[in-house]
Amino acid sequence: MQITVLREEDLRQAVELWEATGLTRPWNDALADARRALAEPTSTVLSIVENDQLMATAMVGHDGHRGWLYYVAVDPCRQGNGLGRALVDAAVLWLRDLGVPKVQLMVREENSAVIDFYERRGFEDQHVAVLGKRLDRP
Image (cartoon, rainbow, N blue to C red; front, side, top):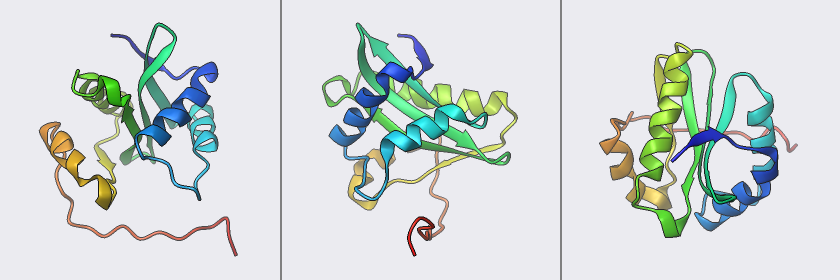
């Protein structure tokens, strides 16, 4: 298994994977998210590709203090084979190598089954509420 930065030619497959795993929302442009992450020095999208087929992704970025994981997705046919663990570990290492002291992620309420996965990777509930405001609308 080789983890690399997502290639431009795999962007569409990444969005399809995120849609298949329920990570996209109609109000977010996932393709723009990926392009932005790949263009900025403080973020990237890690991927596992096998035989030109995208198997898994993890978007990672930071603000200097906190790192964030997004779009952690594994092809449903390949889940349970260590791809997610490998990508999360690689994303954490990417942040650690940059000196980022903390990593966080958000789990949607309807995806709570994945919480055990993250807890096994050392993540803990932070007991905070996440509030948001759209800036691209009036």
